[in-house]
Image (cartoon, rainbow, N blue to C red; front, side, top):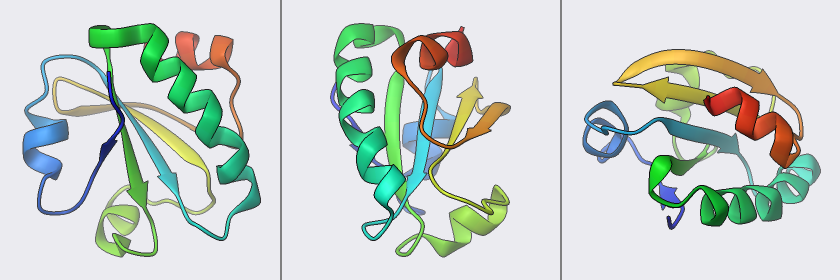
Length: 103
């Protein structure tokens, strides 16, 4: 499945109303570890297909969402299931860790 850019405007539709688990990547352009995480997430989204949705939240552009989910460091990955917060992890995560996170 293609990675979706998440904004305050589409958050409810893309995340809260989603029927599959959503993995949110809170990131920024200037963040080195975020750049390391990006290709891992791209491959993970492709591998998982329709089983999950992967969304990216730019903390510089979507400060309100970052504040709402108390993002203190990036990259931070959050899993939402049925519109409810499930899990959170910070730092670069490899594919196997991502699989554990969303199951």
